[in-house]
Structures are given as structure tokens and as C-alpha cells.
Length: 114
Length: 112
Image 1 (cartoon, each protein chain N blue to C red):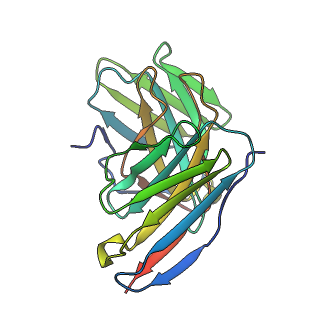
Image 2: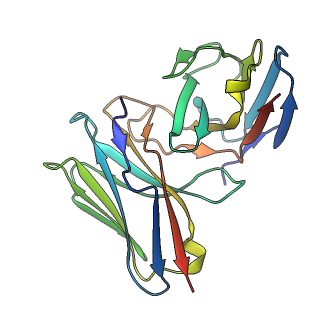
């Protein structure tokens, strides 16, 4: 079974703090993704990565950055957290190399920025 | 502008009856569609998919129908069970894309 692990289930941070959300997958997947889920808006793509050290902006990249130094790990960084970044953050991975890839998700990190 | 839309935020169905969840899309380039199920405090899990070369795909109690001319897909659950109560997301992808566009989700409640 594919396993996507997010390091924290719940986080509470203060406005202006630098926040790191970590995600690790154990299936040697090429692609990794960060989404945020908000009520009524579904899943919105923040950033994704096709390979180590490669990253591409998703639909809502503002206020976020990412890092992929190793294939299995994809980090989401909030340089200076703001209250509008309070959300559920979901990491996903997929195999890559073919057009039709199922994405496998982690359990999510619920971030509250006070 | 959302390219994948789920216009019903919630749906309530009696146990044993059929649940029908709907999804519309705007991009005619989309050729691969998936449904995910999400329980509270868990990540979405893959449920069923369909390629645009088909108009129906079935897996046990779950069937997905695709109407390309209407840019519409639906998920049928028969018979519905209380354990099916969850939020259901549809997602779509275009050729050579490795990313998906997700709808806003429909919360299904199956009453015993």
C-alpha cells in the first residue's frame, strides 16, 4: 500500500512565524503535490513537483514556497504565516510517467494561524 | 474560475436507496476523471475512475457515468450504506497533465 505521511496532524502558529509542513511518501513516486482544503472551495493546488529539486506553481502559490531535496520528501513552507492561511493542508503523491495517475493523499495537517 | 463543479454541497439518502452525486466540467480537454471519498480527519481516498473513451465504469456498488457532450459525470452508489457517509470529490485531468482539478465536494449522509 502507498503511504503518504504528513508530519503533523494539528499545528497552531502565530502570525508572522515561519512554518514548515513536511510530507514523506514511501512508494518512489515521481510526483508530489500540496493542496489546501477550505469549506466550499474543495482542494486547491498550491505547488507540485515532478522531480527532485523541481517545482511548479499551482493555482494558489502566493505566500507559499516548497522544497524537494529528496525524492520521497516534499516540504511546504509558509515564510510568514497569516491568518488567511488557516486551513487543512493535504499532501499527495503519484507515480508519474503516464498520463493517468491516481494521487494518494496523506491524512492532512490542520493549521491554525492566530 | 472553477473548471470542475459540484453544485450540490450536500445530499441525504436513506440506507438501501441509490445515491447520485453529480459533477460538471468546462474544459473539453479533460479526458480522465476520478472520484475520491473523504472522511473527517482523513485524507481523500481514491474510489473509482473513468477514461473519456468510456461512458461507464463499474466497481461493486459504485458506478461512474460520463456524458462527454454534456461535460457531466455522475457517481451512483447502490445500495447506499451508512458507512458511505463522507465528502465526495470529483477530479479531472487533461492529456499529459499530472495534476488534477478538483470540485468543491458533496457531503453525503446515508441515514439508517
